[in-house]
Length: 70
Image 1 (cartoon, rainbow, N blue to C red):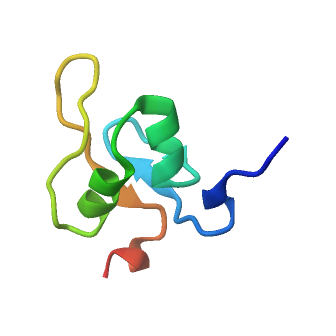
Image 2 (spheres, rainbow, N blue to C red):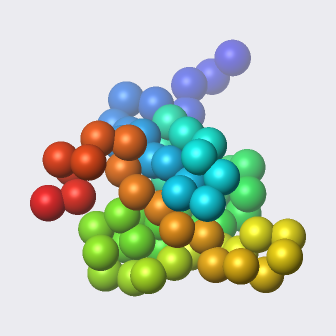
């Protein structure tokens, strides 16, 4: 199986709403169809949310390592 481009340069992210951890924002994009740039912007504090759950609630994201948000 061919490695994805983001496999070597990724920052793990967590969906605060669900507690589910992902290897990267790009992985979330491929699985949930939420723009990876929006997820990164939420993790960096530029946006408040990215994507919505099945009930229409905004999804909150953070880096798995809290020190990366600085």
